[in-house]
Length: 421
Image (tube, rainbow, N blue to C red):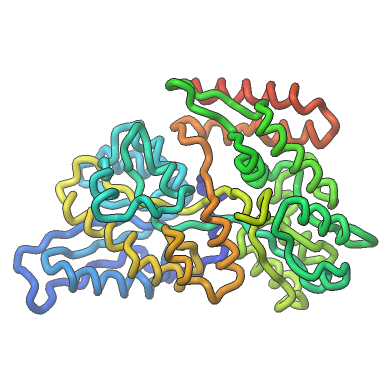
């Protein structure tokens, strides 16, 4: 996903120390004199300094011929920096990238195909789809899932109790019914901005639709399919049960500030937004609850957009074997559990969700992550988001425009952007 969105989606993480480079620990007792260094780029904020210290010490102990050189990068401007590094023979060996950025890097010929290792050593069948699918391109697995974060419903327990809503809804219809009960007097049943297109995407996926599809090598916008239109209609019904602005997204105004006023019953956001809410209104501490975005039935939660990171290996690196060992370790069970507990992330496999089972907010996020998806896996998708026709489409429909006609026009714009090269 784009860096700005990912920073919001990862607002729940702990702050990192200011150290920009964590060098390897040197030769350990019993290690070989012939040691090589694997250079790893990770993003600032993705892991704590304590986690990286633990990982480095353990990895070098287990791999007596390898040293780690972990260098922290900033999200701002990272796309161009990674593109340049992938063309450099002295570039990093392992790089953390946003899960939806993998396709564009593969398209430029800069990543190693890790399909064999994924199937043999990394348990790819159990990966979260929202991380695994965007890491796959043209038949190969280039991005290895590292961690995920996604939206849940944050709710005000006091307002639920006052409205007689005894438990969080588990289906869409229950959700609409509960929200209508909550939407009375001075209380908004839900605050949902008109252009929250990531949330809309989940409703469209639940209906079996998509934002765009690859048809025989040609990407086409698909907001005008019956499935996608049903997703938009549910969004319209839910959004009407609050006072979210139809012509703005969730950042204008920041939805955490709106919720902090105390008269909003529900909000769709990553759990970390609760921290911003409590900072604005300390009286809400201990009064916030969390549940997965409801699905169409009780069998499973609703689909959600999955943000997070994949690990990639630079094409042509002289340290391919060592780089793969680093990826295997970071993506393996031991360090996935450690990272999830340390940073309140969703691990890369559903079977590892027990690592966060004691935390209500993260457990709700993990339940939704099992139904997670990512944006269309086209190298050109960033161009769609740059002047997002989905947002404009949503505002038109919420303003009373003919939905099929507006969807057809938006789909045409998406197709034009994805066909550009």
